[in-house]
Image 1: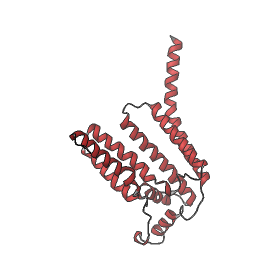
Image 2: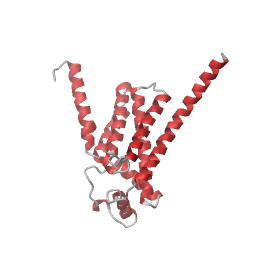
Image 3: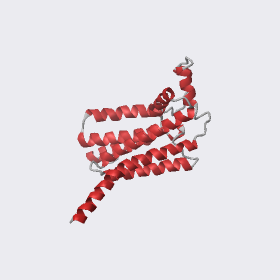
Image 4: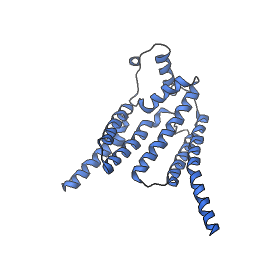
Length: 218
């Protein structure tokens, strides 16, 4: 009986350690993105933007942005990084780490809506998968967390809006519905790809669900 209790206690301790270890793995693999830094005009756009706005007296209206300007979270995080750090490479790495942590939090939020009773082991496995994604970003030149072409807002807001929508369906509450609406607006302003990635599929799904409920052929 003593051995059995010891085995259960050891398993519980391992479970408690697993989740912090998974978060540490996410952070360590995020830091590895620093080895992929290659400063060029696209990467330095945000640095030039905030140097002009904060130091040179420029105006936001003087700048032209791409169809995917990534206002949230990219531009907001870059503004924070500009105020905190001096070197452009350090700022980019900080933004990368914060993006990955936000992505991890968004994925966990969605997972909890899909599986409210998800265990710490399940969350840890999710973080380990994200860590493997970070390693891909470090080892391959075609995928970057640190490049603005990965459409980070679309990914993050897709997870958050879907999670909020599932929460609204499950428990109701105007706050969650308003959260979905606000998230969609911010995400579309940050990148029009969100329309194809989230708005269109969700709209079609809602129409089909409505037809099913009304027994109307679609």
